[in-house]
Length: 198
Image (cartoon, rainbow, N blue to C red; front, side):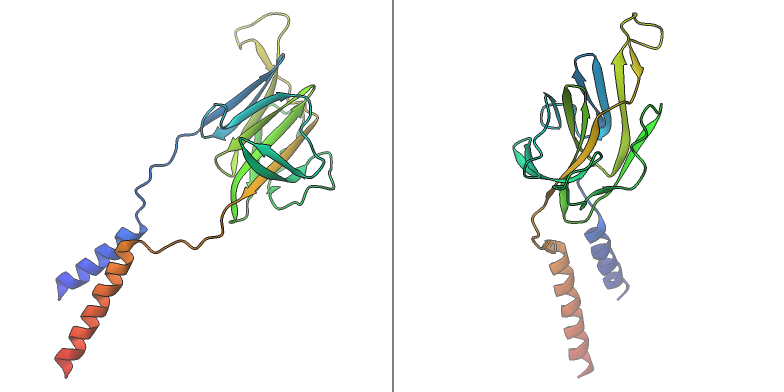
């Protein structure tokens, strides 16, 4: 009977173990003229996760395509009647000219992905973030030449910051096959116990 308890315990533990390795995260970097915008916590610093563009993003409908998917505007730091406030900052991100800046978000469970957009001068940078917190930095190229700290100086000035989000599918998550096997085994044990008593 002791082996049955061990098998059931192992089955319960197997249900809670994930086999997927967590994706590595990096800093996303966007260079707009003499400005470098960096956001920490993106899956990759490539065209599928970072969009650098001249001009302004469109705010006409409150919806926009990033990375071939439609996103909804949730927040715009200088105001927008199209923003719905579904995803919000949980910290005071908007400290211009601060040396160290962190961002942190309140993200509802139905949200599949979030984009942070920094508008600066004549362009913007959109970052598909891989978590609910990270860092950000806006640096200007030092026109007087490079020093031992590098060629860029942290300025952290921007026009505005946006949050865009995409909802995921609201489909139920199926119980893994091991779960059904565990339930069938427990049911079989219960049936065997009843048969022994009668």
